[in-house]
Image (cartoon, rainbow, N blue to C red; front, side, top):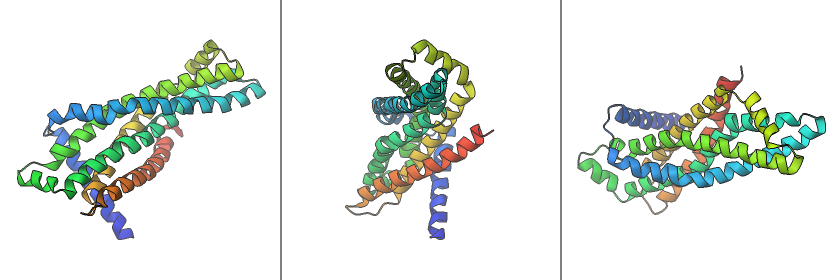
Amino acid sequence: MLQNWILYIGWIGLVFFNSLSSIFRLRIYFENLPYQIIHLGYNSIFIVVLTITFTGMVISLELSKEAVRYGVADMVGGGVAIAMAREFGPMLTAIVLIGRSGSSIAAEISTMKITDQIDALRSMGIDIYDYLVSPRLLAMLITQPIITIFSVISGTFGGAVMAEIYANISYSVYSDSVQRFLETSDIIGGVIKSVVFSVVIVVVAVVEALNCPRNSAGVGIAVTNAVMKSIIFIFILNFVLSYLLFAK
């Protein structure tokens, strides 16, 4: 068991450093980048914003109920904004992107492995990290922080709507609370999380795809393992990053 995990961490390190090296040396196939930005990032915006908006509404509903009870309704906006910027925005965005983009990466590359397309690329002298992995990693590094910011805004806005409907907290009171409590460091911390999570999503998906069995069940196994392990890593890293960024 321990040996398997050591081997797995080695695979993660290999994929990560090879991909990063490809990007820094500008060996990436940039003609593949626009498609990956649209496919992995842009096409995910709607589902992420929709999910996080309702999450913000739920958080606001619970906070508003208690805030009105204790006479601190002017703190609801700040509470929702901080929760979205620090935790729910980056983490839930990552989870949604795992289900959509991470599974897509695992499915595409594992299919290419099973059908010997990766071997064909290597036989033509094409580095698979330059051609397959790095464009996807760079696309996620570009788009996921932007999507996370959109999700924080949408979640905070959803909270404002619910606070007005449920507790009659006006938008001006809500926005004043956001301005008083939310700090730039909260937003920066959320963006840092999103960058780390984007690396995890791509690297884990690629590792699972490259190690999938060469049979009819290989694609399903790769996608399932990529989603499951990415979520586990995201929750662990979310705790570690929250402690390092916000505990003080």
